Length: 585
Image (cartoon, rainbow, N blue to C red; front, top):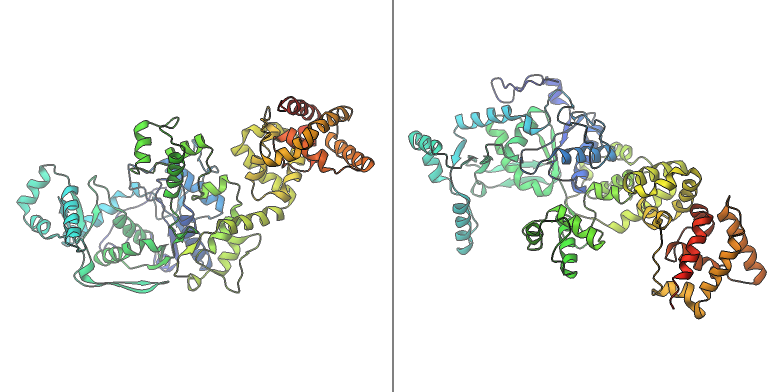
């Protein structure tokens, strides 16, 4: 695909865009590939997708990779994979390709595979358009070079704080410099670092928001802002405006935290003579404690755990990087993950990939995210087996709220539990198989044995809150050995009560089970337990609980017949022997 980035005449006349296309509803989602897809971003993408689909329009996925230092192809692939996992398809943008893993496909190049007539869809490939816009702004006297250093700006901010006044950037000396051609040329030729700023208008800027209504920013509050960074690349502000115009975007939907950027964008649209899209700022997502749900939550959790554990270093992490992390100078995810791994810590789920890895179903996450700031009315919360279709059929901006939404993890878990139980058995089996293959290679032996995997699925579906729960709870099935700790109260009760009667029962069970057939071992064992309990007037728990401790190291397993069918006769008897041998002296 070859795109024509030439701009003719007025800046808003772009080749290949017909009048009909300009009138079509077009929305976009424009993530920065500096990390995984945050659930807040996923919700923005879903609402933008739903609005386009509900109005017969098009939805664009655009990758805003102007941050050269932090943008990575791996993050791009992960974002695309998560969009695919959620079922949010797009009409224009990087071709979905073969990227199905949240960690991307090493052999797939998203930059090479793109679809649509208004590309390329990576800002790193759209430099000609930005340069043309910058030139036009210079020609109009609406852009100027700024040589103020970070130290100078920081000093000005500190002075304003000391005077108890709001900081306001003063462009006067820079405008004077730009007006003196010789002085400006000498400054540029000297190689001094500089940026380019946009000169804001001297009148109020009005944002007509589809959700919040009219927002007016007074002229006195407007401040010239950077449109070209010191490295020569465009800022988010300039690239957003140019791309939204070039791609015919009719509605820009984003979180309310971006509302303070929108007056800048409106001023840029007007200066460049471009038609304004509509704007809709959706409410933020907060944690249950009222704090903003942020990727930094992982860093906070890891830092607190490392502090409690008095960690002085972390395996695989440079000491300086770790020190900077602990001193709150960085929130590097690689450090958080390393700390979590070393301490066995579960980091808070923030990104789509986190929930995916934790075994949530995509349709459940879609259903729940849609409720954060939007409602279809009539107190409906469950959107059926196909939530995206329901959302598409019912979505309107009028039903999007203005207040921040709180992320209730317990409610999401409840939704997921219900959905897992309601899956058709074959569907549950297929999803669990993929989850285990992706995240738990140690389950290879069970997956390879159809009968054992069938038993594993049947034993877990009705008792699982997620696809991850069977995997974590069933690790004893695939472990080479079980570590026994007889100190916890529940284990003491199950096997050590009455001077260790549980161990006596295990010895008896070992002898009895050794006579049972290997085929259908678990069923035969369960039949023996039931028959013996009835004949001797025993509580079946007196036999079942010692078995659970022996085979798993704990007191919670699937039903005994299923558990022993999966383990098999040889492994079961070996663990009985190991548990008896581990009895405290």
